[in-house]
Length: 615
Image 1 (cartoon, rainbow, N blue to C red):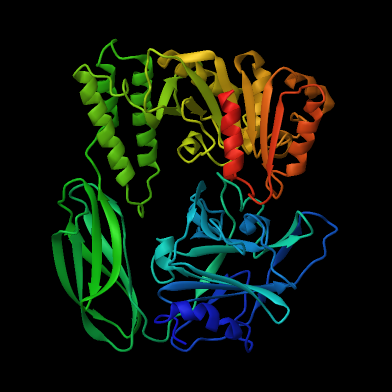
Image 2 (cartoon, rainbow, N blue to C red):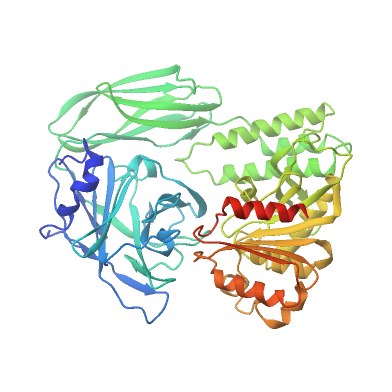
């Protein structure tokens, strides 16, 4: 079976080979993990047992779990099998079982933990999280991996089995033939009992599922190819200033030394060819690497497609960005000279955008295109130009967008997301819905949240941290300051301020409400947790299941939503909280679902929530 020409069929056909005759390839902790090259003749590999097993409960039995890794010029191949009579299909199986997640990224020369990586997740259960991107360079980046990534789970001969083909194109800039060393880790998650799970690691990494954390890994040691495959190309950079030199690295395998024509073609977003350069290079027999210099890039700012051809066959398509000209200090000076007529909110919002864009530019990696940064610079320039013409660019802005305020404590600009109804009328007062984001997220979560209600102005505070449970003093100050700013800038009915939150933000609702109970007319907790701070922030944190906190919620309307199969934030805890406060508060509405997992809500439950908000 040819992996290159028939990758879809391999997903099934390779199964019997993966567990075939033993190979002499072994793992050495000193040198790294051997990865078998898969060419036209697939090499059966010996399965390797995971190096470390951890359990959510000490009473759980151990199971045998093993894996095999292979690759070629197009794909990384992963096969896992474990003891099991059936495959369990839990919500977020990559985290809760049955499923797995993996780290692949830059291996540092000193072996230290890396902050440049992808974490990908694969679940037995069908749905949005069956194959997904989880983290990118320490940030939570949930999203589908698409149809180019092949994944299958099945039972065979008393084993549960999982396999995936991941195109190297999906995880740029990592490739076995180009760039530096690659680090790798793999964690298979087996569901046990009702809510328990067993983790099998190549290298134990307690932070593998955590945001804003570096990752552990073992080096991947790739076998040299012994037959012709598709050549691979990658730019040494994907972002440039005008006048920078562009170089393209080419890697491949040649059956014999030969002279080969290569072409670099640059197209604009409309696919119009704007520059072309041809090369004729002599490549050596066997595996080769070569560098093509296009010369200086003299293109206008914007994003372009760079297409690489070998003998008229395309071997790569990449996006590069020519960076918009800017000077952040000059932009700050321009905004400061617009005069006192600018509202504090508008001034802070534009100033924050300058600060944020500068931070994004400073952490930009060589392999990242930066169309988002270009767009931000253009937006800043346009807003400053409007202000200089006497026009406030946010005075009539509706929908979802990011605003900012200047902190009274340290004069820094702090962001929050806001939703302004499309028919907003400044002469009419509006109720305010405060939305606290979940763990790993920030105020951008409002862009994707479907727990908000039109007719409200909605504010999502940043919280000064992605996973602090809104427990810290700084996070509480941020929530209060963000609400204050919204009430200054918009016509808010201060008697109708509803506090809501999802997941970690559900705990944040409890914490925020007791800080200032007179500010809120009602609270809503979506898939929340009453004791999360002790697990994530402070072992002595508040547990809202404690009897002494029950009376704090006596005089407030409460809406609670939870799905019974939620493992991330257990249903039973929020059910218990609801029952506790119901004894002295009749205004508690508890809505539950059966199979929505963590982060989803049925249409019926949403309807009940929105009806509750109307009241």
